[in-house]
Image (cartoon, rainbow, N blue to C red):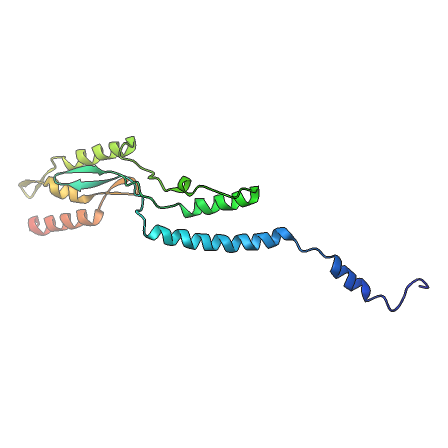
Amino acid sequence: LNEQNGWTWGMTYVSAAEKQEIDPISQDHQKLDTTVQTLTTKLTDLNKDRTPTTDATIEKSGDSFVIKPEVNGNTINVDAAVKQVKSAVNSGKDTIELTEFKEKPKVTSGDSSLKEQLESMNAIANVKATYSINGETFQIPSSDIMSWLTYNDGKVDLDTEQVRQYVTDLGTKYNT
């Protein structure tokens, strides 16, 4: 206790504050986060005036289904670009090439699965479905069958609501 000076106890807090370092990495992360938010906004705005990339799909054309080709747009994949910016900053790079992040179609008109689904849809649309109700025979028109077929998210399906309505109409017409 003899060695302690009662007047210098407060100085330990002052000198401790002088020795405390500010973490430059956390400061840089704050700047990076702000920059990334700005970049995300600017890239999103830039994409508004660009042609979006779309996948090839199947659509009706006359009395059959056809492949509608993909569109190679010029929009930027914002998430991938931002991720690369963060990676570049962390690794000390000072440039990235935005053309590397141009969105590309996931499904092209040459996709074998898409072609198989097209063949399947055309085969179903050309089925000669004949029904006999209460002694009357009739054939479901191919155009009706085509209108029931849908292609969404890479899958062929039936529009069950349209089929249900068709069956209801048949019931109304042929049930006595």
